[in-house]
Amino acid sequence: MAERYSNRRTRALNKQEFTDSLCLRYNLPLSNLPSYCACGEMFTVNHALSCKKGGFIAQRHDTIRDLLTTHISKVCRNVETEPLLQPLDNEVFNLQSTVTSREARLDKKAGSFWTPGVTAFFDVRVTHVNSLSNQGEHTARIFKEQENEKRKYKQRVMDVEMGTFTPLVSGTDECMGLDCHNFLKTLANKLSSKYTPLATLFPGYEYNSHLLY
Image 1 (tube, rainbow, N blue to C red):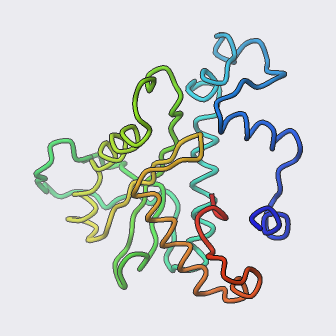
Image 2 (cartoon, rainbow, N blue to C red):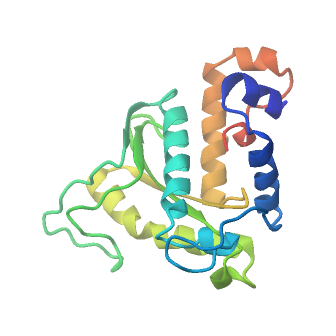
């Protein structure tokens, strides 16, 4: 069903992309890779997904951010990408790691996503769970640690913006953190409530995060 929906409403993967996606999902080697990365190091999947010079980190982040923003815009008002947070006026925060920069911004915001009349702020992170630095760590623990790291924005958003903050942490293996899972579930429910033809297209089939991610 998901494949049929993808072919009708979104861009379907071609043969090579589908094969590569399966290999990445199950941590299998890819064929026909270049010998060297733009940084000069040997080119491997692990290196490509971790190298800040090669461009894949920014690309995968922006792809997820823009996809989610597109869907949020269908069910929320006042949606904005990379909103600049309001400047501070000597506010004091209990959490010392709270971000206080005048240039601080998050990936997106949307009005009334969680609560009517309250602006919700979101920040995306896509992590390579099979990188050398994550070896031996349980995936759920990796996501939890990165969600906690993102919470350095939470108090500023709550106290100054009077909004909510949700870290959207996911992995290159298509898994995701608990906050991201809850966000996608809520977004999917909002979309299914608005676009009732989906219920007739897939009788008894919930419009869930698998069609969005």
